[in-house]
Image (cartoon, rainbow, N blue to C red; front, side, top):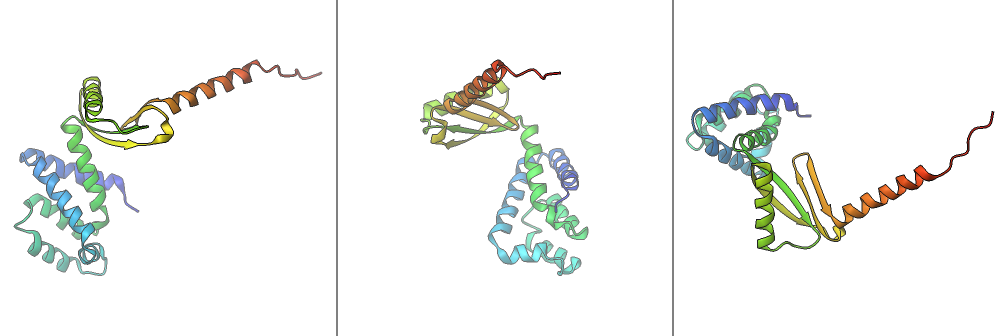
Length: 191
């Protein structure tokens, strides 16, 4: 199990160092590249995550392979993870670093689901409206779900806007059910 609080502390420290050195984007790219490399290479993944590989050997091999390819503070993060036996936090640190970077840059991810594919003009207009409303840059991911019947459903973080026909029908059904329940005459208890 990954301790997210610890991963957040590592990510926060890395974020602050990257920001201080003006290398936020490069750090983000390097973490993404390392993550892709780990996912692509079963051998590297087994080596990095294995508790059986001695820490000194693992750190030395990582330095030898990556030293001139990544920023010194990204290398130091990997060394710390190995030293403290917290390699399993790497993915969570990458996720949290990206979240911190997006918050700093006023960027918000949005999942936009529509009943039918939206054309480019519709996508652009929707993104502009969301950016205008939120005051942030929107990074959209478009999905199609025919069960929505019509309209769109937008999820930005924990916030959801349901402008779909399916959502409207569900809300109408709930409203009617509540009204019927309210109007039902309940027998009064006899004494």
